[in-house]
Length: 104
Image (cartoon, rainbow, N blue to C red; front, side, top):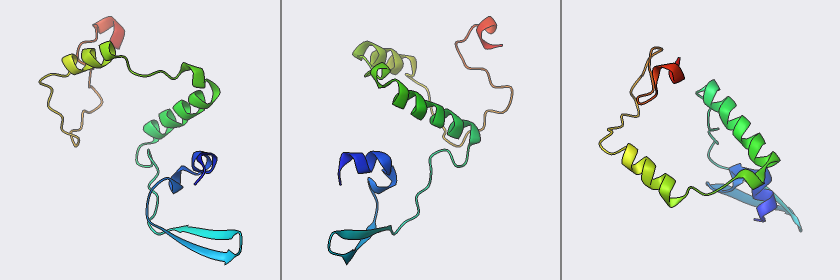
């Protein structure tokens, strides 16, 4: 599919589809599996992703790659950190490493 089509309809970028020719030059494309929208379960994440999407469209020149130094910093900062994707932090969670005056 053309890039413009996939940009406009990202749900067609991957998945299981049925394609039927209706008449020469006209196709009906049906996604066989439902699309789960990112952020459906979390309104805060959904709002943030919508904001990021708008900003990337308005200012594509501000999108940059992660530098090697930035990557190395993050890898170093996360050494030894164990991740539990199901862990609940609760309302009183403070981000480790932030000074008290920065966090609250």
